[in-house]
Amino acid sequence: MNCMRDKRIIFGAFLAFALLFSNTVLAKKNVEESFVLWKDTKYHRFFIDKNVDFSKYKKMAVLPLDYSSMIVSPKTKKKMERNWSNFKQEGMPDVVTFFDSEFEDVFDDSDAFSLTKTSGDDVLIVQYKAIEISPKAFIDNALGTVGMEALNRVASVQYQVAIYDARTKAVVAMIEDDFLVSIQVESERVLNNRANHRRAWKTSLHKLAKSFNKNMIRLQEKSK
Image (cartoon, rainbow, N blue to C red; front, side, top):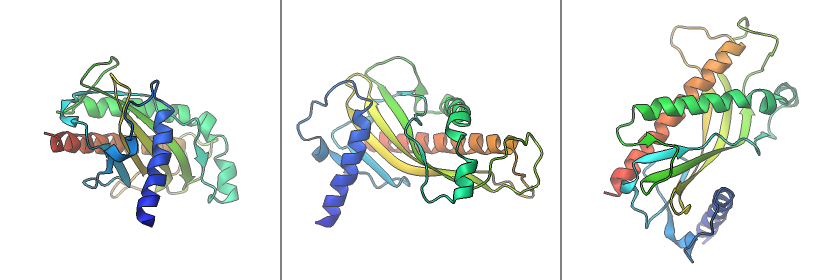
């Protein structure tokens, strides 16, 4: 019984987030009952509308990464928290640019989906929302390409994704997960500097886009 209650609480939080981006009221009377937790995925949680035929979708309109409500994790140590205090204003605009370019790169090579800026019966609207960032390395804004400290992990980011039918604006799927911003290169000592921070974000966002494409293809095939 507690498990079902927890699922309703989690789903309710997801749906509240999703409806923030929807311009219409969902037509279904029992929205919660139509969603199930899809387990054929490595995402922490992936809710899908069991009544939707995902095989009909061939295109995606991926909106810019929304970080308006993102916070630094309250578990972050004070010194690190102060170091990252301006990242939302000064660093996240670059992250949004990287996000857009890496998703374009991945979906240019996708066999199942293409990106679009127009609506249609075969189009999904995808909204990523950054919820919380947990810094793992110090940012030194004075350093351009020179740094002595080794860099492994930059940060981890908790996020949610709301996926809509482009025609009806109805929510058809929701995701909650996190990703690690890092560089892992064999036989190379990666230094903690601005250039490698940017490199880590690009590499990690590319992996994020590839994982999303892979999961959506699996969901598409499941519906056939």
